[in-house]
Image (tube, rainbow, N blue to C red):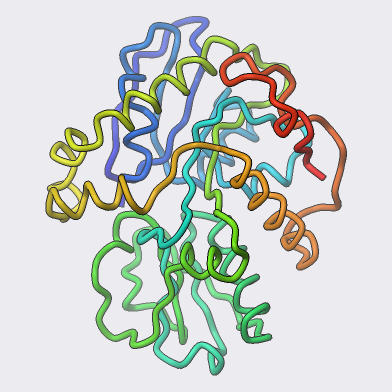
Length: 289
């Protein structure tokens, strides 16, 4: 499950940064372990969100639906994990036609994907299947449900026994006409993040410039060929939080609220100080609302 491990050595005064332990994060953390003043650790998206909320982390790459839940969170970088089409690593697998689905097992690793699949099933088919949990580490083939949502590295491999399959990135983009943002760098309000903001954007830029090398380094660990690994990083993922991505986040946020998966809109500023990536009108005007 976890493909990234280890951490930078923590020192007094270091900013504690948590990143996702999947292949999709590799370009976002390129060289971060070598940066003085940053203590980097890896975990599942849902656990990162819990640790950020509990104060065990200062900055974390968390699911966007978690950002919607807490008005004390601010986004601190234009680096993100997004897609503008098929994402490959977030799949809905079903043993029955989607419109006949009665039960759905949700991967505990990401709450954003869990919210997304519920929204798409309601919008596309008018259904709300009974939800069950797919515990971390449990083989999805053993799930006692009509369908299962899986995320991360294991979702990139062929799944036998499930004749009906969705790539959630493709389904969202086709249905909404907008990109989808799965995760972004978020801090708790009041944390001085100006230095780490610059480093997060710089790490993303380094990683995007070294995708071929990163694919060679990580392909074996996820069971992909170098060509497939490179195609995933280069063609399926998008690492920049641009205007279209913000529009997609707004659309998803509004739907999540409509379906009871996010709290009522509020009006705090999204980014209090754009130290790393400019102070554009669009980022200033994007709120939790």
